[in-house]
Image (cartoon, rainbow, N blue to C red):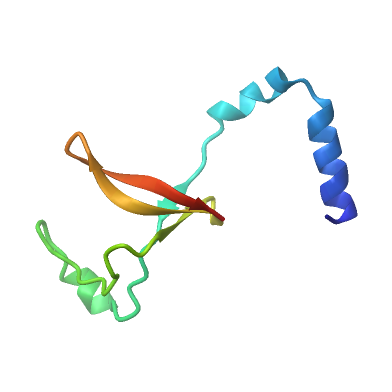
Length: 92
């Protein structure tokens, strides 16, 4: 661990646990990414309600899950109560 990372970790551990509760309301962008290497702008223009995009993604391969662009975990798609969900499978 580098010096700045160490000092930040030390500072974080010195704070009481309840001092971190404010971060729970901070907004973040969560994205589950499936690469579409052959997807073109023309394909985007042709999208309509009910379109199906062939991903070439093998069922069972984990999908990267990012928070604000930073990889945090791997997941798989699932259905929960009739809605699309992601299930965490491994931490990055």
